[in-house]
Length: 320
Ligand SMILES: Cc1ncc(C[n+]2csc(CCOP(=O)(O)OP(=O)(O)O)c2C)c(N)n1
Image (tube, rainbow, N blue to C red; front, side):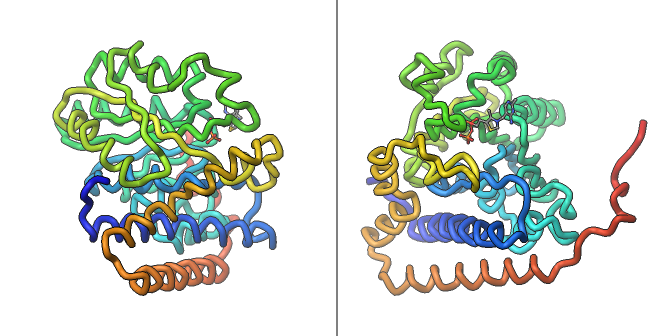
């Protein structure tokens, strides 16, 4: 087991637990009609955002996906305005206009979740080009999905990032399904990280349910990107705890496979690491209680927040 700083381990556990409770409460709020439309949950995949972002600096960028609540929370978005965004309220990160699938924050350097599969990948490459042109030292982490890697633009974007040695790390969240299609029905390669070879960049596969493993695996890709040595593809193996979105019962997930992955739960893995590192169970209970209070406060904040006004609908819309 890698030797990990206890403070870092506590921070990673707190973030994973925050994402978990945020989404569990979001499901409740969806069921009572406070959140509408689609809600794609990150339950079971939390370790990827937590581990990948733990190694970034505040000025580094992320680009997210339709399953993006965890990315945003790990990048420092506060649960209150995040929940308000899901509620469509004026106090949300995008004034309630983005909702679950379009959370973004310039200040926090989250270039946005995206409802279109693979659409974030060229945005990440464009951001990395901008960093390069400005002579900056920021790194862009592009969260993308197994489904996105079957999309033409994913391949074009990886190729361009590679030929120009752009400062980007592609973090492919392989939850093994694109809606109900298993990865075995859409790819012939055993590991999607093998696709990196086609573009002359390193490709690695890591246990995406272990935040420490993800964090360790990201060290060299982040260093490489920052040093101008080019991109890396990091495939993180994981599994959804349910269907594709909140209203999909996920009946196509083989029950024994789902159970196996649930037994390797990302939050439990971090808790076990804390205990094994000598952190007392009482300290973990304190963290849990504080997360609980934060998320309760986030729900209250969202509920009490005003709806966006009709007059403001055209604000920030420009016509050329
Ligand atoms: C370009 C495009 N095609 C199809 C869809 C419809 N769609 C939404 S999510 C999804 C697949 C999702 O699977 P994956 O990309 O692996 O991400 P995951 O949901 O597993 O995180 C599809 C096909 C879309 N949003 N965008």
